[in-house]
Image (cartoon, rainbow, N blue to C red):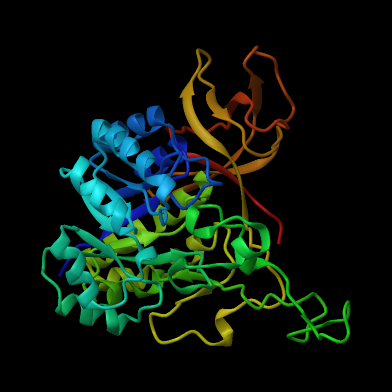
Length: 409
């Protein structure tokens, strides 16, 4: 049995630290160029260096995305970028382009190369091809079934690792090769600037009747024909392990710390419980399912793992998330009064009941007793995003605990 790695996304240094504390074995991040999430906050070289040092101090690995499909004008920049990365020492580079792969092998041969899902990795011959060139790991296409992944594992070298998405948003295009964004807005998905037109509302217009919009699907709210449900495999950990997958990858490099903490903590416990005792995993299933629904999601599907998705894998009437909790902030250190520092993310007020979410699985209800600003002035509420505040909730907290508020149904 292979013990799977839990691989968590991070959009910023703050989120990286959250992922590490809440159970990640590895974190993947993007720099300010050459990754496929141009709209994410991403990491400066200084933040990347600090993040790698923090992760390594907690025995967590860091992988850096460089998975654009490069054009001629990108190549000299890629060379300079890899020279910088060589100096700060991430554990792996995630690459899809053969030209970028060649540059990485030449400039930083000591850094592992993982082949991105963007490379359309759908068969064991492709895995062998990349292994022979020196890749350590290949990320499987989202379109593979459990049976196909198992066949790949049986037909590749034991030291070649399989990484597979197990949770998060699904792309309507094959392995992320989407042209809709470029066509509609001039922003290229394969250069990291996707506008997610798969989440937009569409209708049919007949050529001789311009301006007359016909619904593709009968619903008064519109038609979201490309809008997939989110992948969630928390209930299928045994099958994923049995298939021989080395790394369970969570999608979400533009998500908040609350999302990352929720998903990391839940999958961490599910994996550990199963490895300890399959019966314990089955017993705790209601807890996993309850906790995983505490972050934003679009309803859940098992994607392609158990056959090609049918109409039930789509959401036709809306493109909005289900949101059960609001993210309020991350707990920092304390001041001389013993109040806890936070950088506020959403409004909350004195007298409100909120929750403290801890890495060990506890969720503590607590009442906001005091809010004090940096000048020492009492506040009745925290209305300003990213304001630094000091708070008293009447319960003991630790650095990196997450504060959240349950929303009314």
